[in-house]
Amino acid sequence: MKRILGIALVAATLMACNQTEKKASETKDSTTKDTLTAKSAVVLKDEKINTIFTQYEGIKNALVQSDSIAAQQSAALLQTSLISYKGCESTAVTASKIADSKNLASQRKDFTALSSDLIALFKHADVTEGTIYVQHCPMANKGDGGDWLSTEKDIKNPYYGAEMLTCGRVVEEIKTK
Image (cartoon, rainbow, N blue to C red):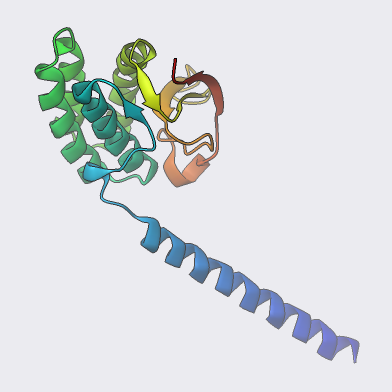
């Protein structure tokens, strides 16, 4: 009797695990968004800065998904927007490095500098709706740490993707003034 009960318990556990994996893959597939046109829960007063933020989110989301091609595409769009925004020309060079690389590790390294520059930009922007979360992973960049921006308080780490998706914390909130 114990043996039958044990087998039934193992079978039930395996079925539950398979269902969890199936649900996780279904959820992943249904929530995969086009990172190039990500809709933001944040609205900024200046339309150009709002576009820059949306394109930045596209890069961040692509890196969270470990999708180097989508990161390249989003970075190319961001580069164009940054070139046309006075004072952001050097940040456009950083975006171009991400756009020119197919190497995910290299893209993530350049994302650190890109995020640093854009965090400074968005701290001075007028947020009219939503909250921008400045998040930090202490393990990124071989222990030097790395910051990024998000519209969600939940951590989705662009430096490690699925490897360490929730590594990090919110260090600051940029809200409406």
